[in-house]
Structures are given as structure tokens and as C-alpha cells.
Image (cartoon, rainbow, N blue to C red):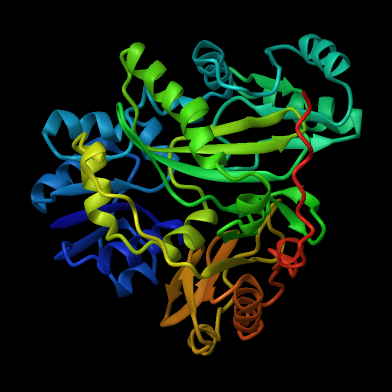
Length: 432
């Protein structure tokens, strides 16, 4: 099988690593890839969000499957163009990707499908925002309606920050809208559900860390770390994954099919485990970053066959997925100034030393090669991924490796998975 992978981040590096370990994959191409992916695949120049470029590349290279990593190509209609060209694609059409591209649309679909989620107000004016914030009260949750690379959400007790610094900035953009919704209590869980338009197969759940600093302080980011599996979830809410498939993922996929926009790809379900039961925080239409890095590190079933089955509508024919019982922890190393104004061009060293730690591999994201040197070229620069016999061992290995990486001014949380290791993640008692 010849596979074309779209994207250039650590998520795509994790996908490349899994795809190239699959005996069904003879050749892996990446558009555009990054220096780390280039060690596993042939990286090609071009814009992965340009449908014509992707179709031309896929047909000229005689590709058997296209795997879409980031959201921008999906919203741009890359999957639609590939379908017209007769090339199997793992990723939803532009119409189906609206589940991520518009939070207002996602809320509409959830309402129609009976999916449990927070009450929300869609606002197009500052006056509507003021009314909505008054109705919800603190903590205030304000989300940009469109794509924001994981950084379009503000959760704050500061009313001025909610209405002026975030909502006003979102509304000032062309066609700008925001979604103001009730705050959801309880720990968060990320669940990737593979869909083929009618069937749903869940992957192992994970938990990520969105705030920049330890103790969930600082601004929201694209994600500073993750871990899987969630032992505390198995103990406190056994059967939750099956429940979410039955009450969230499958009804959503069925509703999208009813609307004439079948969903094929990853339905990322972001959940809050509240005192009223699980509630959907958000949908994404692709693998999440950095959760993918830890989830795929534990997947034993060859990945390419799973993704091709989804693209061809054959998920129901697959045997159950196989998982390693080990734990995986991912720690993101970010550039100085991230997320507001990341500094680029700093040399990145120590990757080989980091990879010498038992059970560790290093995935590249915001990197580039300049005159033979690896330098930072984005906000989130690396994902350091570990696998260990238990969470404590995986955490120890991940941080031992992180401390071998050298990047001037770099930022990394020191508390990824610490609360879970110490048994401090508690699901609120369900009311009623």
C-alpha cells in the first residue's frame, strides 16, 4: 500500500511512525511533512490544504490511501476532491468537517441527535454576548465559532476578559461569531471515534493538558501534554467508552448521514465528566494533538488497515482493536513566547540523547533544517513520548528525556499526568 499523509506536526509524525510500522504499507509520502517525518517518509513540497495539489500528488504518485492529519485540508474540501478523483481518503468532507469548523453547527447537530452537552448561546453582536454572559454567570466560557488551532476558547472568572479581550476580538473578524456556554465541571476526557459514515469504533481514551503552566495556569494552548490509558476512568466510570459511543458518537454519525453529509474519519469527542453525567465540550473532525501521540503509542493493531477500512466503509468487518497494557505519557516542548508570540530560529539539540531513554521516542512538530541545524519553526516544537509498565514509570521516562532536550527559552509542563499517578483525579458523583 502507498499512503499519502497530509500535515506537518507531531500528530502527523506519530501517524507516520504508526503507518510505517504497518507491514501493509510499502511506501509513505508526506505533504509537506517535517524533518522528523522525513526520516520515515518521502516529503513532498506543496500545500496540503489545496485540493488540486493533493489530488494531483495522489494520482501522480499512485496512492492507495490519503490520511489527513490537520483540520485545514478537511475544511478546504480535500476529501471531497479526492472522492471525485476516486482516491480513498481517511477524513471527512467539508460539509461533515463543519462539526469542527463551526461550534454553532456542532451544537445544532448535538441538539438534533440528543447528545448531552452544555447549554449554549450563539452570539454575533456584543450586545448578545453581554446577555449570554449574564445568563451563564462565572466561570465564563467563550468560544470562537470557527477554527482557532485549539486556542479559540477562554474560560475565566474575569468578565472583562471574557467580553472584551476575547469575545470582542472574535466578533471583529469577518463573519465573526462566538459561542457562550455554561461551564462544565469535572475532569476532561478525549475519545477518538473512528467512523465510516455508519459504524463507529472507539480508540483508547486519553486526557490532555490545555493550559500552558503547571496546575492548569496560564493561557489555553493547542495542548501541552497527554497520557493514556485512564486507569481512574476504568475504576470510577467503567463502561463509559461504550456509553459515549452509544449516546454521543453513533447518534452524531447517524444525524450527519441523515443530513446527507456522512462522516468518515475521526470524530474527536471532548468530554467533561460532570456531576450530571458526561457532557460534550466539543467535537473535532480529526485526530487530536497531543493525545494522538500517546494513544497511537499503545495501539498494537496495524493502523493503515484500520484507516483504509474506515475510508471504504468496512469498519464493522474489523476484529476488535488490540492495545498494549502499558502507559504512555506525552510532554510537549514549546518555544519561548508560546502561545502568544513564539520565538523561532533557535537551535534544537539533544534529541538523540532523549531517545536513548528506555521506552522514549521524540516526535517533531515546529522544526526546520537550516544549514544542517535543526531549529525551532513554530510554537509547539517537540512531543516527547514515553511508554512504561505503569504511569509512574512512563512519567519518569518522559521527563528524563525532556530534560535532555536543549532549546533556548523552552517551556514544558512538569505536571503532565501527575494527578493521575497520585490518584487525585476524581469524577463527581452523578446526581439523580
